[in-house]
Length: 349
Image (cartoon, rainbow, N blue to C red):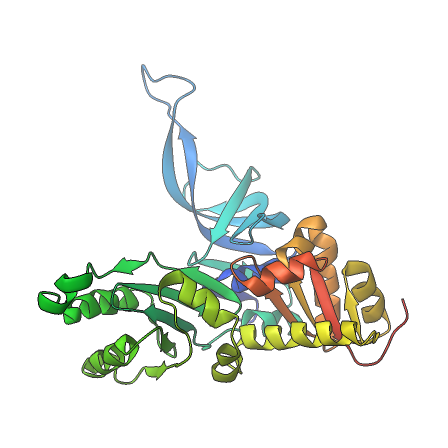
């Protein structure tokens, strides 16, 4: 999340991924003030104009928050309330309006007092780089960006090589240029490029990137042992031991480790874990939760209850991770009731 502190009450933010939108859902409360750009339909007051016709204009408004909610897939945040200020006199104060906040949309949040948890959440992802996953072969290349525990795929790229044509006429560097151009559209400072795939193509592409002065300072790594290209290669990598070894400090690797520990404890019939909201809620009440992972399923069942629970757990020092259906881990957590946790000590539910 990109943040700028304007003064002690006002902070401007730009969410960069779905985790940021979730954090904003946990931060913004009823009676806070949200300032941002939006559009409104203004009724025309001209001769011969239709009484029901209006003109949609851009306007900057200040909204007193009355209601806030995430959509089903956690990639949009709806903030509803009444307008207290606007940049256009035609927009009446006191009327209702809703912001639909998406990734890369900017807003400012004003609070009478920022709580320590809210400040931590708003700055939690600052300066964290993502992982660019490149599954490349002579015929195609899959590219995805991993931010936190969310994977966003780019369309597959195809080289056009096949059989004898590849041996005689095919220029692989033109294909590499195409892949590099695609990387440039999503690459940001502090990102880490991880390349894998069958054969030697990944090493050739690595050498190709090293010749590019703009990419020389980007951390780049080649991984052996993943023998698939395209999207299949990326899915294989995210479920492999190589992912946990190479990306040990990434959120996805940490979440994978937590889920593996939960399954190992379940096999041992240990009670040092919880599954589902009720068990995890009870464990948190007595301060037994050490870390927890939840999916959008837990949010969808009772959003406000889950938001209140997450804030209470984090205030108690619990390490919290969210996952979604873009990864195999997210699907597994949803299948286990939407939330699992590791406990500090055994609890009988």
